[in-house]
Length: 187
Image (cartoon, rainbow, N blue to C red; front, side, top):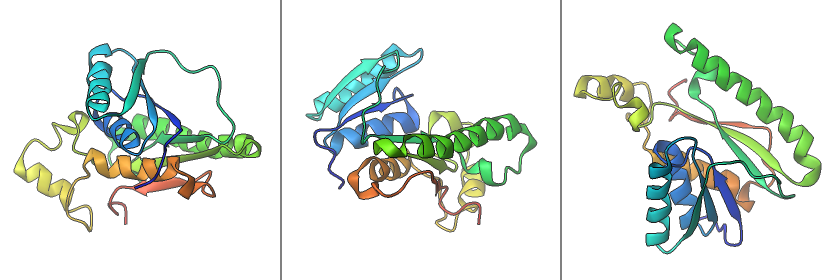
């Protein structure tokens, strides 16, 4: 387990899915977690309650923080589709995340002198409410699973563990990178 004691993490979209899993994981590693939300105050409150019920420290926040501390970590959530989208219906989604990957590299150069690392994680199909329709039948689950050599869809905790590593001091020398979190599905 990575120690994040004494650190504060702001997790955007932490009211559900991968964001919630990341918030729970970072809190479990000792971070004080700002549970950011756009429109779901209820989802954010549920995440805060799950963290505090487990003995962690968390608070909900709807607006961004005005200051980025030196020595901090930024971990963006991208997608596997920035490296080979095969579905034309996902073109706009892949393009927006490709821009995020570019921003990751640019910010890494800009903020490196302040000891701030900036990385991105590119999940594949993850068993969240966002993918509920894609994973709703045994046949569709099997079709997704076969894409990965690990023969399954990701769980939110799989992605949260990668983010926890990148947020920790263990990854202090990793910056400007996009970490594939697709279970090898793009091989």
